Amino acid sequence: MTNKEAVIWLINVTADIGKAKHSDLWHYEQALSEIKEMLESQPERKKGKWVRSFDGNEWYWYCSKCKKEWYEEDLWMGGNDFPNFCPNCGAKMDRGKKDE
Image 1: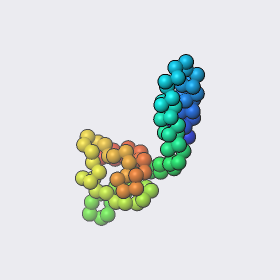
Image 2 (image 1 turned 30 degrees about the vertical axis):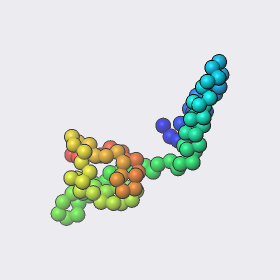
Image 3 (image 1 turned 135 degrees about the horizontal axis):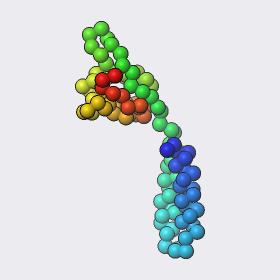
Image 4 (image 1 turned 45 degrees about the horizontal axis):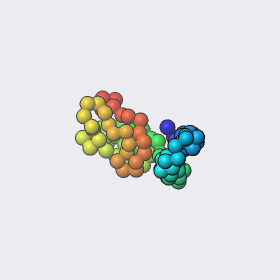
């Protein structure tokens, strides 16, 4: 879900709460309003992917956004998975596989 989609969803939920017959739901409306403002003020997260390369001695991976290089032992999360974000720039990554 993108920030824009989340904001639209929050607007709809807030409208539904406003239609409720219970006046004690005002604090939910306030919380949803604050979350909406937070989402609108934050830029969308960059998207990237893990790219595999070879430096002449060993294989490494780098972030397609910030180009930071990582060796497998620095990224590997166990199994075949790498993190779904870049630890350097925070870009949301396509999940890399260790045996690619």
